[in-house]
Image (cartoon, rainbow, N blue to C red; front, side, top):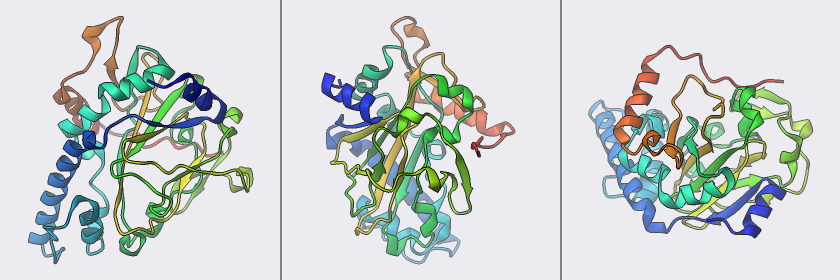
Amino acid sequence: MLTPDQLATFHRDGFVIAQVFDPQDYLPVQREISAHLDARARALHAEGLLKDLHADAPFATRFGLLAAQCDELHGGNDSTEILGDELFALMRHPKMLATVGGLLGSEITLNPIQHLRAKPPAEQGRRMGYYEVPWHQDSGVTTPDADAALVVTAWTPLLGASEEMGCMRLIPGFHRQGHVRHISDPQYGTTIDPALVPADGHVIGACRPGEVVLMGQFTPHCSTPNRSRICRWSLDLRYQATGGPSGRAWHPSTVLQSRRDPASEVRDPAVWRRAWKEAQARPNPGAKHRIG
């Protein structure tokens, strides 16, 4: 669980970096992603869209080697596209729930905004703007009803994230302003109006394997190009106290922990997966990004 000092840092700065996992906790997820990526690569290879499978390349480098050959590899790898058992197991891992429980209490729901992201080396990216994320608040991609209560983003890199790898940058204390004006960026989508971003005071959020960046929905953050030789895989999850608006009402929220009503907890990944497939089959109103 978070220490009193870590809780104080979170509330003062809007974020804290905490050691939550052991590095080996990520291995089942890495194997699941690798299997998904291998299946996609072999299908694209059969279509003649991919020349070299790099089948012997390790998890740390294979995505970049494949994506450098084929634009189709850049999409199709999100958590809600894989919908894997091991991904769900990490989302509801007892270590994660104990950590976010220090901020949210015992009634914890997995917010529907959840992503798996691969950030290849810049020289292999082919779609550079897609991987260079400008300053934004997570509230910028939710409906305003979710502003009233804390939504905790838990961002964790599966292989660590150094400054060279384009790790997250954050602005401490800015969260006290609440949601600020966002504009539409032609490459990224929704970003804070640049006139509102302070020129200094930025913090580099480097993470060792097993560390998690915990932040609220009003904490500005961005990332820079990956100048390393390995892919920066990361899992971006959000948690909230059960019962509050998710900011994405058309997508499924998932109760992960409840002392009041243990029967409401979703423990079976098949239940989570089915809810997502049903939502994906319905007409989608689209991401409600907030402009202005």
